[in-house]
Amino acid sequence: MKKLTKALLAGTALTALTTGAQAADELNALVWCDHTDPALIQPFEAAHDVKVNLREYEGTGAALALLEQSRPGDWDVLVIDGIDVFRAVEAGILAPLPEEALPEDDFFPQVVLKANNAPDGTAYAVTEKFGYNTISYNADKVDEADMQDLSTVWSDKYAGKISIYDYYMPVMGLAAMADGIATADITADSLESIGKTLSTMRSHAISVADVVSAQTALATGEADIVVGGGEWLTAVLQAEQPELTWTIPDQGAVVWTQSIGVLAGSEKPDLAVEFVKYITSPEGQARLATSSCFWGMPANKLAADHLTPEQKEILRWDNQEDYLAKAQLYPAPDMDLDIEMQDLWLETLSQ
Image 1: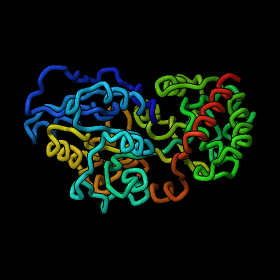
Image 2 (image 1 turned 120 degrees about the vertical axis):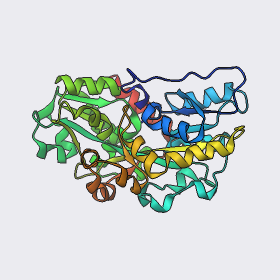
Image 3 (image 1 turned 135 degrees about the vertical axis):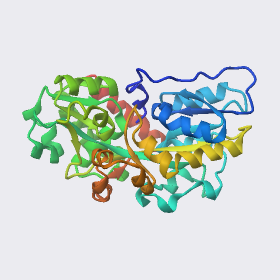
Image 4 (image 1 turned 90 degrees about the horizontal axis):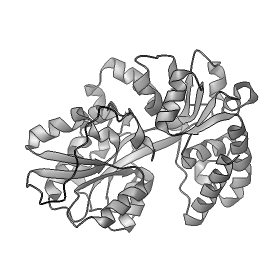
């Protein structure tokens, strides 16, 4: 999900962080674009008489670089890809979270992910939202039964009608699952098989696209299928184009998660913790799940009480237990394997 920050930003007002002295009633947060929705932020501002200054960023590396260039205390809250929390912990930029800030007893247990958010046994972040990198498609243009088998999705039948989401980790995870390799079991020895599958996928695709480009291709009919898509890609399009939908194939899908934590050195740690508690509360979770930028499942199951039946239907609320049982987490390669995976991805893109 590192490229989600490009999605549907038009009309969304971002509040720029100034470099001068910060008022006592301000909170500064580095976030993904779904946190910039006023419907999410304004209730917290009103309840705490505070101004939340939001800086949207693209990619964990960009956030880490920005923090390195900032003064201690400039930032209070960080939203980060769940798989990358350990990087922030290793860099010493996240503060431990108090247990009362973690309502994880109310969460879908599959996305609590202590191994991600508490890599040394101390909680530094908490999952706030999740979803699936899977298959999005136009139900009027494809045989929906074909979408249940990954090998059929990128078969000759749909050559020239496929777009691939431009992020190597989930797409390579899907390729591995199509080959019968669990995402947790990907090794250097797996890459030859995965590479062949990627090559087939790429040869049948018209594009490898970021979120906006993939959405546009699906909405305009340039592509009928997006490999690596999901609810986050199509939910905001379904009101006008209900034929644009998604599924979890028989082989499963890759689960993405995003986490939130308090930055070490925050000059307002108590207020920052209150923001984390709000975002993971049932009300905050419902607003985050249906953000105008992109939709996704709230980690907190109690958000259901604050979603309309129509919203829950779009999110496939009643299917989540089955989906999570079939889905697998993002690959978690060590540095050497990650470099090899990126090299393979670049080789695939060049074909």
